Image (cartoon, rainbow, N blue to C red):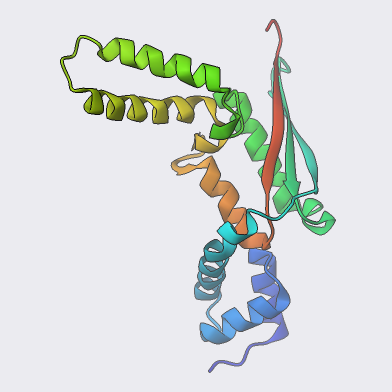
Length: 198
């Protein structure tokens, strides 16, 4: 087992934002290897991120993004559990990234459950109408409607969107990774997108 020094723990803590004892344990488990220890912490954190989702997030920040032509701007509420995390530069950077996402992709809602039932029904009716003369059985039509709804959600719901900087990552997963990093629940409260002339 490798000797774990306080400098090694400090380096891993700065890289991952995890607690001191977690960093020490990860380094001991991974023979002092910084990269393996960082991966170990991430896997451990992601596994328990879903458990944290029920905890209340009452602290946080209002993040902003103003486009360089000053004609487009976003205000976004990003919540966490503690003021300690809210003041962290990495957490604030997440707020800025999410604000840029809203500016670029123009979602209408934070999450699927925020879409009004009437709007959802209207979308379903449109998709069913499109499939009316297809000759497909009703159960197949419903599966196609569900598939189209997934695409609809990916357009209008922030957490369902592909991250503009890495389309392989959904915004929901980006937030989950931060939950794993910090060990506390993180939620997007709401956002407003302003555009000159709209």
